[in-house]
View 1 (spheres, helix red, strand yellow):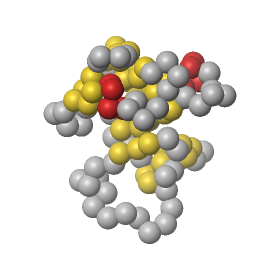
View 2 (tube, rainbow, N blue to C red):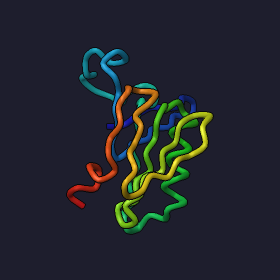
View 3 (cartoon, rainbow, N blue to C red):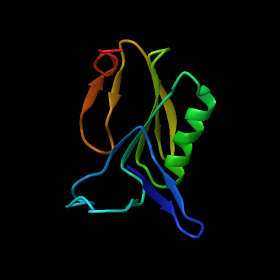
View 4 (tube, helix red, strand yellow):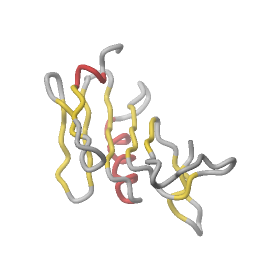
Length: 116
């Protein structure tokens, strides 16, 4: 899915995983890109990506209105959690991911990497 995060000039971004609430999109648009950033954007580091480039992409999402971003490094099995106005949080083995401000829930780190 693509997200139009700026106009004139247009800027369309596409995360590896995104979440948009039903409150913001009661029905899926028939065509085109979603206007605005998702509530949650997930960027996964591929073997060719540098960690810095993945974290920079996360910052771009925050800068365009995402409320929560996960920068995932499958090789290191770590997740950098980004939220606007809050210090980044690095979550590793044994940790859990807080889904605030989206929902009051936590996901165990091990669940994210269960099939890696």
